[in-house]
Image (cartoon, rainbow, N blue to C red; front, side, top):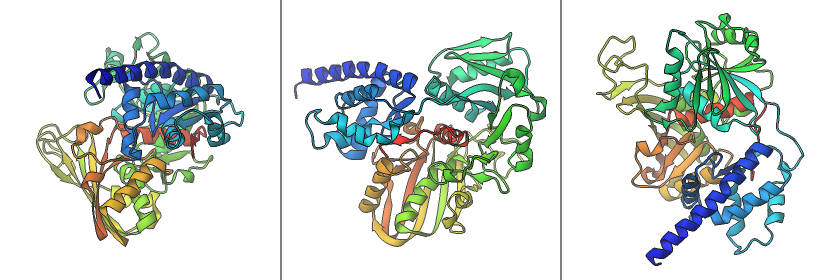
Length: 477
């Protein structure tokens, strides 16, 4: 291929991607249809991001996928009477084009694959959401909900509860939302309304409520009713403490972004979200590590059976460690997080059993905090009932990442050059590093990357949707 042909192909892809972008917006704003490509959202994606997202197809299918192949599918979607849902055009395009070289039969193909989405349902009335706390997870949840906002999305962020209220507080919090040292600039505009104590982010009016404890708040005075309160402070982790939120006027349910204590249901979306019942008022979204490892462990256990294992977590430092040496009530955590690897405990291995009871008592775990600000890794050393080898195991995990019910949770890479910073912004709960997989007879070692901030926040959003009964089906099944 000549150098000129490379440039011509790129410019063609740009032109097609530019024509795709308004169609994606039309589907999302008018029909409530979110278009994804192999699990990655295309809503609000820039032209270059659309092209880059298409390039990941080779990772899953072994074949290239171009915007030219997805454009006719997306055009057809705009002409169909679809109910609110998620549509993976990557999977549809891969299946349609693998044995065709023209568009003949595309409409019939899509009607067959999307039959369940053509039931005439309309966009649901949005449900109110309140974020209690505005730390790392709270700000990322805010970004995600603003990204999804619009007529097509059934959850609406109405308020954020924080302590403080001193002069300059609101501007400071707006600044932390605008600029993030790890995740980059906020994609849009944020206006500070000092008079009404609110932030307007991409047109979304978000009330800032200053309170030191839940009982001080009456959400109905802000026009908020039957809200889901997402507690990302970690202050209360048992039913008694979290019940304070439910007791507030205007609040209906609570989701905890940390492992729950006692008999609180710990949910890893993709694995056990079916335990969420309509009458449940308090649910936990477990921990970032539990969310990263449980889907992969379920996949392995389903096919090979896990008899025992050890999970070693190499985890980025967090805000509960000291930046420099100072007193800390936790063992070793008083030493400088930016200068040391810090051996510590993790309950993630045991917590797996709450979402996957068949592994109860079979796993142990420890954690090493390391001087990186984000993206962690779990090393799962497992003993299996059935023997396997690296090639077979990786092929199975690749298929789970592409076609299983846990495709939104499990990602897969076989790159030999990938490092932790490459995974910043990953929306999957965990990413299997196939190049590092070790498998021999009935023993395997798996290396699972995860963005312990953003990937976990995406899992939390899935749980929010499930709790409020507004979770949309993904097609093809």
